[in-house]
Length: 401
Image: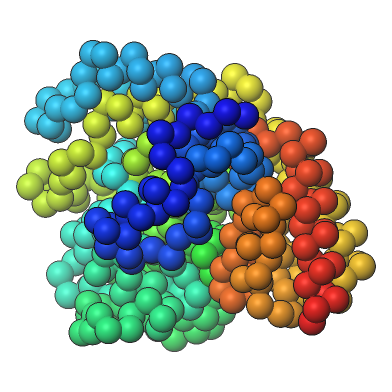
């Protein structure tokens, strides 16, 4: 395909090196266009993107209904403050809450959503109850409260002193949670499936156990569904996989199909504690993001993408189970919907570069896990294309091990 770029990748990289703070490790490629599950670089090379937008592009790149909604909204109203009502925000809130529960507050990112949830938990519970229990290998964001809630020391280096009021428990360990919860606990905060931590899926009774502990101790249960919202697991929200409803739920990433957006939904009684003046977000709920979110929900339903997610998840499971039987370097597969973790006995990092050389984009996390977050509308042919490349790469890595 002919490139749409006005500069080569190297020219763009040189411009970045001069003008952009280098706090991200970047691959030496400038992406210029995307369509569905594929992206193209400045030189016209095509890649199958099985980790689009770090999970934000839940409908792939530039889904036509979302593009059209953004274009139409941009021609009418791009931004106004939340001192006014707008139709798109009300409609998107209704779509989310009727598929979930409660009432919504909108912001711009997952970290902001977690910050809002933390504030709401402290505002709702009696004064003096401020501690929050979170979980090892979790990830909640980069702002100060969110990064403190993230119980991974590597994200804390050089940032101390961190915020007070967080206690850490091992994931899937209910007895440890019971030991940490006390009269000064206001909430338990957990990802239903730990994403960055390696696609860690809870034991069958774990989330129900957290609900019980929260109820017995009169504290709130918060689910961080930044990755698991918007159909990622095959249901609208991850909590619906286990039938355990939280008091507050955070979401972001795929919520607006690639447009920056975050939100919380909370039970009405709890939501009432987020009183005027206690929290706000200047760009939160802006018309562009809301129009994109409305279009995304409608596209998922009209194209039956929750069902496609479940079918393609089973296809990944089948293909990768066969590969696991073949390759001893694959210790474990952890798959739920369009969250795929391939846990290796060797470092997973080299798989990213090797797949990229073969035209497939994946991620490595938590040292040994190859992670995929394909879009809900990935096709069977694309699943097979990606699995074929992964098989070639992992066989090569097994030979080199």
